[in-house]
Amino acid sequence: MDNYIKFNEERTVTYKPAGSGKIFTDPDADKMREYFRDQKPRKMVDKASSIDRVVKELVNDGDYIGVGGFGANRIPTAVLHEIVRQQKKNLGLAGHTATHDFQILVGGKCIDRCDVAYIVGLEARGLSKSARRAVESGEITLTEWTNAALTWRYKAAAMGVSFLPVRCMLGTDTEKYSASVEMECPFTGSKYLAVPALYPDVGIIHVHRADVYGNCQIDGIMVADNDLARAARRLIVTTERFVPNEYIRRDPAKTVIPYYLVDAIVEVPFGSYPGNMAYEYFSDEEHLRAWLKAEKDEAGFSDFLQRHIYGVSDFNGYLDTIGGLKRLQELRATENLVEK
Image (tube, rainbow, N blue to C red; front, side, top):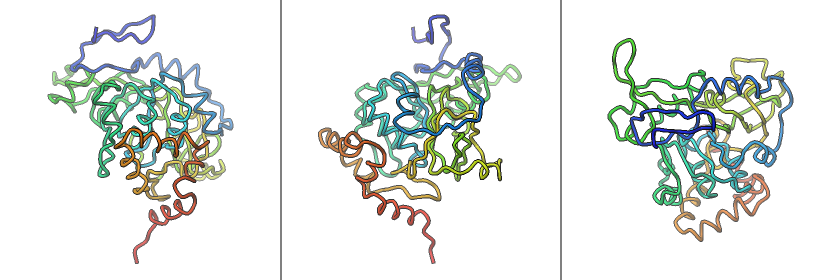
């Protein structure tokens, strides 16, 4: 039965995986092209909204989500908090470089399956105890990939093809626990792995600036966000600030996510906190350490989440709990520190 994945009542996909992992999303490019053609409006209209509204309307229980950013950099924290606050359940996640974002969603018991390249660890900061417990207990079903493989799964989706051939993972335990398929090159006979296109139900990305129509600009590293934006059925974007459309038009080459990909956009200053936002503010290492410390004890972690997420009405309320504008200005100064 592991070789049969039923994505809907009309079609069952049969494949011979190289590994034991499951495909959590339908890689059918033709079906997605039809969806984008018929269901994705192309009008340039005002898409500004609020965090609570977009999560309520665009994120459903059981959805598979893709989160932008890289590690703890430029993560859409405000949306993730609201997903936890609204108690969304049975979500799937692309754990591309999932550090604090994975930690948040596990804390809220929101996810039950994950395509994993990097999770549990918060890089040099240490391991998330709650995330590790969730994985080791089997609470979350995992399929493994490399960072490159997950990136190329988004790339395949953005290209409108159902898979891409890659050389990474061949002969490794990562391949063993993936859902890739070994294939032969029709031109050379060389062995490759076919990795399936990844089309999330919802993509969530935080950017530096955007207009109300959804034209977005990102400073610094972008990694896979341009492909994620093109792969997602529904795309939620939060932005540090709104700028006039005239500002966007001055340098259109900087628009890495065009308006027609975006379903809703919300202005959220400091929306990546406690993560780093390049050229805007540094990550709050003290608060991230507080997360890791709180997770050592389940009761203490419950109190921590109550104080910072469940016990506040919105993201601004969360920012107030960590020191408010004073602390945020300190992080902005740290990010833009110029040595003399």
